[in-house]
Amino acid sequence: MQSFMEIVTTRRSIRRFESRPIEDDKMMRILEAARWTPSWANSQCWEIIAVKDEKRLQSLAEMVSPKNPATLAIAKGPVTLVICGKKKQSGYYKGQQSTKFDDWLMFDLGLITQTLSLTAHAEGLGSVVVGFFNHEKAAELLEVPAEYEVVALLPMGYPDHAPSPPKRREVPDFLHNETFSKK
Ligand SMILES: Cc1cc2nc3c(=O)[nH]c(=O)nc-3n(C[C@H](O)[C@H](O)[C@H](O)COP(=O)(O)O)c2cc1C
Image (tube, rainbow, N blue to C red; front, side, top):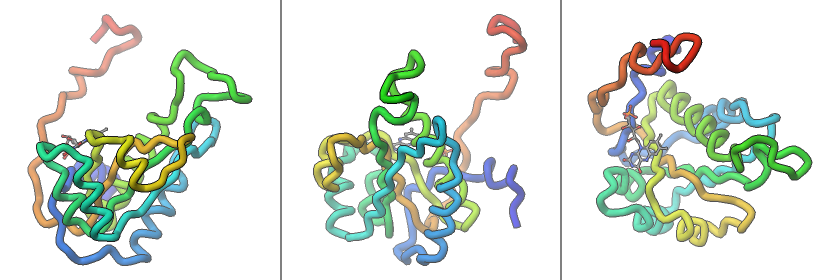
């Protein structure tokens, strides 16, 4: 069994999958883990659409720029999880914006997306977060109500390649001590 540190550091964005489907019990374990993601005041504003239908996946892939390296992952992968969020819920108290940031939806959806992708990796699966696509068209295709945003796509499947890790900033490059000016 991989340690948590190994899972975090060896997860890579996977953009090519084998055609075999993901077992239902595996997908349920991934979603069960995702359920425990933290969120603003436990608001859990997320909704996830699992798209497996080939034609629908093809239509979804057409909403991603052909230049996007993840397009084929959607078109050819066995499933894409569509990460949606209810607007004006996260970061709101009694319907009023609580902080300077309008909506914490993006933050909470980022967290659940990370839980999904790390758990998928721990289960031997690969995934890639896709944020560059036509969000309005995707919402239309998937009949998402107006009070929700379609934020990200997460194609997932058994990896068909093992990419090397893109370079990361070193800890001292982003760690500040006590105040921003002190590195
Ligand atoms: C919010 C977000 C949006 C992303 N959008 C895309 C995308 O549209 N297409 C793509 O191929 N990768 C996308 N990625 C994946 C990143 O390019 C990738 O995580 C980064 O290069 C680091 O590589 P690694 O995930 O293998 O460590 C996205 C990642 C995040 C977090």
